[in-house]
Length: 146
Image (cartoon, rainbow, N blue to C red; front, side, top):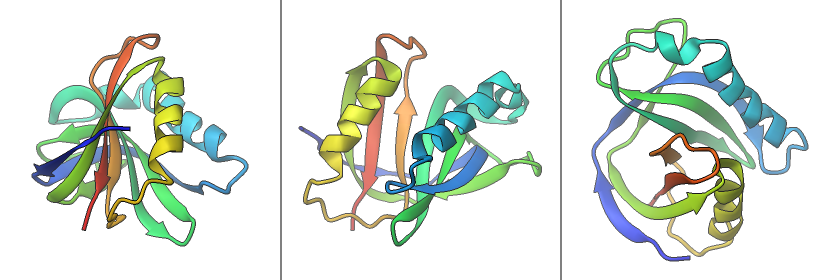
């Protein structure tokens, strides 16, 4: 799977979070539940100071085989104290671009990314959903590097 190396500025993400891991049998339900809460509960509409309408799925706070997943949006300033606020650190990232069915394209990409020998820093990996067409979505996946 091809990727490019990019340098990103710090991003602030506001949304909803949960702890899960690749070995958690409930991982899919946990992550899916976050996206449902974000959109079907109307939380997305309450997020203030959005930089754009692109959804972000952030993986951070890695501890062993567990991590925090945050579904939300990039904001210019965090002003939703009732929601989770996370920082995507500035730095070097491997950028993967995928197209296709929103869930399947991302799942397939992660299956290829996890075993790759990238010099990962595990400080903030994320998916940025650049379109909301479920069947033919454009998604950029960023993997934080050392």
